[in-house]
Image 1 (cartoon, rainbow, N blue to C red):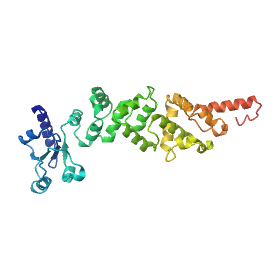
Image 2: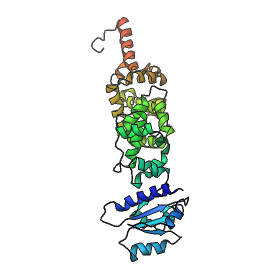
Image 3: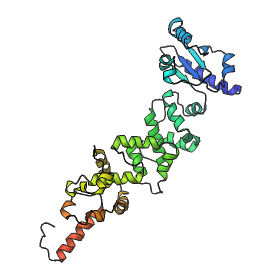
Image 4: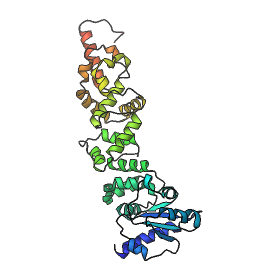
Length: 322
């Protein structure tokens, strides 16, 4: 590694040690590739003491916890970070800080991020940050700083990808549902490794546990809403077991009702899924009095009008009922 790379790393460490604090700073630096081992051995810091790990966790713990509890320390590990159960310095690490000098660390520094709690998010979705335009779109619309939590950062990144108005899972889901470009927005979430996070959040918000496909989710949401009309007795239909969310459907009902009344894109969606779900066939033998409280599909209205028209033409006198 050239001198400029090490000097950049050292400058970052100096800044970390110089940040105002009521307590001394202990920084752990795991360098699995041993990139900076020689530089660390031949260097020193004005504002911190340097320890190079040599498979001696107990002597390090004794030094930090008993012999010197005042000084700042940089503990350099020329090895991979061990798992928690194998890390004899874990209790010290938990009240200390970690420093990284890799692509993830560079990305975080470019974003002005220092907190290690966001490192796993950046690592998991590193390809997202390969585009300056994506970074610009993200930081222009949503706050990205050390005060943001890992989940909120993931939501902001997903919202940026699908062009959502707000970094919330229901708004992100809206863009995935009403994507007119052959599912391109959802494919973007998959491309940048957000599939698991997306479906986990959808499950938590809407108690959805069905197939992880947008098409199936739409069917499930619409039929869950239809099922709330008890007069329809949908329990006897194959659609009940296949699509209806039976536990805590309230969030789904609120979601469907909101887009039904407020989103102009719903009209085209309901026509498409009325055909996919064969709603006309589903209601053809049902009385119109069972459909009056269902607004999910215009097929319901057309069926009612068609039935009334046919009855009146055939001489029905039930004007008051109609």
